[in-house]
Length: 224
Image 1: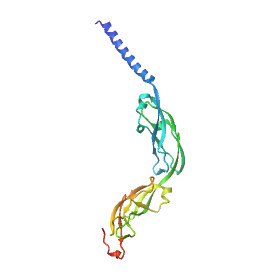
Image 2: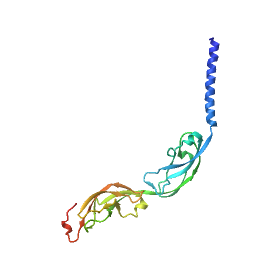
Image 3: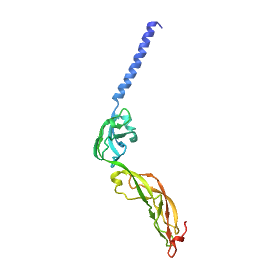
């Protein structure tokens, strides 16, 4: 092979490679486009000490892109991130724009429903509240439960100021009296009164349930 023929061969190879790249890119652009509506989860980034009282959990996002991507698109890879900058309690209107919607590369946002969120903000507060044990069931042998005692008697909770203002106590998970005739103890969880309220500490308490039977002296009844 002569030197000139070799140069032409390399040029032909480079041209072929360029044509292949162009064809591939051109095909991708010409690929059929489809759309799909996804129920996208909404996550919030509020300022420290701010609580959203009624967060919207999902919005409908219409995405457009190559048919093969749309067909295999899973809802969990699309979500909306809403950043809250306001720190004062009250109602705000937050628009949702395409930049807030995280989705696979190659897909564009055609529409969002709703395209804005109305949110109510409140301040986060800490409170100490007494624990009221929750008794259920029927004791054995005609026994009667007396006033239960929780240890510790109070727990710390966290939540929206407006919601905590109306609370006077928190309860425990159910304590069954079935089959009990004598005083007994049980360790149970403290139950949050609302999804917006968090039990800080302790998460569990030990409850003593004094029991009395007809004709017996409560001071002389043992523990089960």
